Amino acid sequence: MTVLRSVPRSRRQQAWALDGDPQAIGHARKIIRAALNGLGLRPDLVDDAVLMVSELVTNAFLYGEAPYELLLQSDDDEILCVVVDSGALLPVPRTADDDAERGRGLRIVAALSDGFHGCHPQRYVTRPDLTGKATWFALPR
Image 1: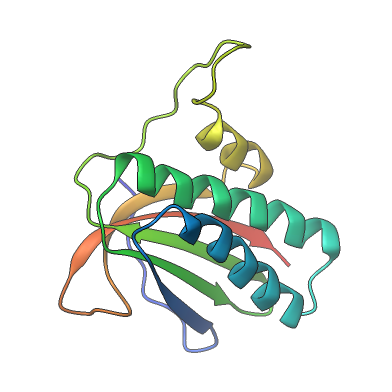
Image 2: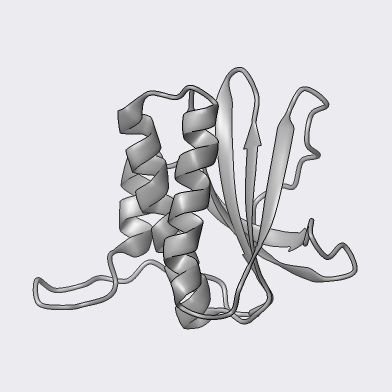
């Protein structure tokens, strides 16, 4: 299990509640792209982060439970993207054959984040009375 750490004071945090329908996946991609472009990140870094957010939100919808939340934390050194849901099942990387439609998402996140990803319990930011699980990745700026 990942050791929890508090958000340093130098970190900026944004949070968005996501609707419980599959269209929220596309909405999450738009939200994170706009937020990361607003931070002045390189286009390739933005593209990688958007793909990873899409994978994590899709997994939350397929295997987790509502409510869903997307968080972005940033400082001068890194960005941290987090998807929170209330499902009890922790994500498990699967092996997918060439014809499989599913099973590659967590491997994509692991590869693009250079292994800086994980899952842990977390309170919701948009609804602090709730606790869920956070699936996340970090990228250097």
